[in-house]
Structure formats: structure tokens, C-alpha cells
Length: 301
Ligand code: ADP
Ligand code: MG
Image (cartoon, rainbow, N blue to C red; front, side, top):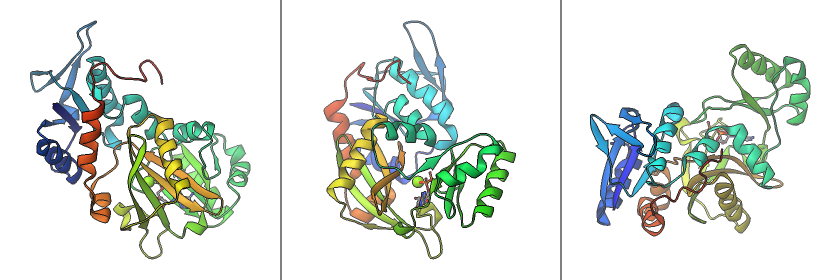
């Protein structure tokens, strides 16, 4: 097969591994810089162009769209979908996962366990918003943050109010969320491919840090997850419409709660922690599922 990887940097571990795994299985892999793609949006003949060349003949596209280029990356991915190329994750699923509020609303509707979360616009509602999240300590997070940036633990109601005021002053959208203290600065990343959790790791924030992101100095180790955690992760990915997802959960007193679902989950941490060939598993999934004109969520937001 001819498989395109939409990514900005070909030399990132995840992208290198996908190329390696694809080539090892006899496929032609090509990393395409998302931001250098441009489009001809003509009726019946949609095209993606790249440095003067018309891109065609791809059987599948793997979107690895960075959070900072979500808007443009989704447009390029949609164009590939219009051309009938099989997307590993569909544009609709990627879009849902990028907006934490929208993702939580969809997960809530599906009955997936979540930390109690509030969202408000008016400063007049700040007190009630803090109350929804159970009062301090509580977590305040920017809707479109990533790598733990924009996630704040407010230890007192006064601190919460100041952070909320500050975010509002910057016209930023944010969530207020129940702080799951019992997770002790660690979370579970379940890596879903298709309808299976193919690997899982536990990430522990560095000393004195409640955020367990590896980008924030957290460390990863292999973990055995419970059947409930397994089914929660699979259900979360399915609800957002993602074939491949990194589902982040906290172990709360009331069972697993999903914080977020990542649609371009990194491979480095999980492959190193578990020793598994996740890139190979992803390529195998594409082999089994890729077909032209298969986008399922066509026309659905
Ligand atoms: P990002 O997209 O920036 O990674 P997350 O929502 O995943 O944002 O939060 C980053 C980290 O902060 C999580 O991995 C987790 O360790 C911690 N965290 C987030 N929300 C909560 C919460 N409600 N209770 C306890 N810890 C949390
Ligand atoms: Mg996260």
C-alpha cells in the first residue's frame, strides 16, 4: 500500500517508527508536511497539492496533526477524505478530541466516567462554577492546552477565583474540574487501536508536580489495567470516533475517569515503557481496514 503520514517533522520518534514499521511490512511510506499541502477545492475533482505536485494514489493517510496546527491540518485531512483516501483517524474524530469541552460533552452523553467539570462564561457565575467542581482544591484548564500547559491546580477558592479572572482577562476558554487527589499525581495512558487496548502505561509526575505529562518531566512505567479501565478507554475512543487514541484516565475513588482522548498519541513513551511494537500494530490495523471512500462520519460534526 501507499501510506501518507501527515506530519510536520519527519524525524520525530513516532513518525520515524511509523515509516519503519510500514516499510518493514512492504508498504511505501511518505511523510508529508501538513503545512506545505494546499488544496484545489473543485467539484468532483478535489486535489491536494504539495510543492507543485498533485498528490494521488494513496491508499491511506495517517494524520499526526500537532495541536498548534489543528485548523489547517483538519482541512488537509478532510481534503484527503474527499479524495476517498482512507484516514486512520477521521477528521471529525480528531476535531472532537481537540476541544476538551466538546469531547467531555460527548463522553458524558455516552455515560463514560469523567471528573465533575463546569464551564461558564460570565464572571458573575464564578462562585457557582467553583462550587460545581467541589470547591478548592480544583483544577482549571484551558480548553485547547496540551502537554500539561494551561492546567492549573488551585489550592484555595481565592486562588481559583484569581486564575479564573486571569484566564477571562485573556479571553481564554477554560474548564473547572474536580481535583482527583487520590490519583497522587499519576494517570493511566491506555493506547487504543481499533476496539482493543494494545498497551497501557502509568505516568507519574515528578516530585511535587500533580501533572503527569512526560513533557513535564513525568516518568512512565508499564501497568496492568483493570477490565473496567480497559472498557472505559475503548468506549471513550469509540465515542469520539477514533480508531487510534491515547486515552488518559485517573484512578478515582469512584472508578476510572477520563481526562482526555488524544488523537495523535505519541509512540515513544508507550513503546519504551512497554517494549511493544505499537507502530507495527497501527500499520496492521490499516492493512485490515483501509478501503477507498470509507469515511464513516461524512457530513457529521
Ligand atoms: P493536557 O492536554 O495539557 O495534557 P490534561 O487534561 O491531560 O491536559 O491534564 C494534564 C495532567 O494534569 C494530567 O495528565 C493529570 O496528571 C493532571 N490532571 C488533569 N486533570 C486532573 C484532575 N481533574 N485531577 C487530578 N489531576 C489532573
Ligand atoms: Mg494530557
